[in-house]
Length: 228
Image (tube, rainbow, N blue to C red; front, side):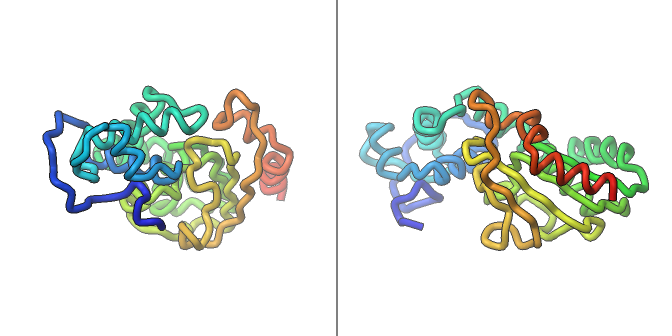
């Protein structure tokens, strides 16, 4: 990675920062900025301040990175970033919330076998549930998944294919703003996963679940597993 890519702490002098969300959410915004190719120099120019802290602790730095993302990446808005980071943070960082959600999903899965089709934040939930579940899953499908984002991976209990899963299939639209890392392969997720990264969802909603499910390859993958 280029040294000037928007990244973590530097030795720049810290200037004052206002109250801000949890560090997890701030680092997640910077992950999105890194993936969009936004550099430290661009963030500094956006701030119009010569000396800043290039770190999640500086909320002004993070805000500037977020503004650049909104201008550069289609379908990402300020409200989108706020909602996405808050939802992921609530699930991964609050054990009571995670346990409540996992319990509901586990009850739906039962003893299996079950073909598990997940989307967006649901891919994180399904992954965490399957890590602990004894339910047999002949196929685990992740659509528009944020599982490849470094901040997300750092918060997961482990990085592997859940033992209850026979086959893991991941699909993404290259324009999907949530699936920042379109492929979940050995370069960013240490598990054997089949990837399709050229899904073409409707132009107005590249992240939508209906677009993924209507894709012929995805639908056939699920149907074949259900009828096997």
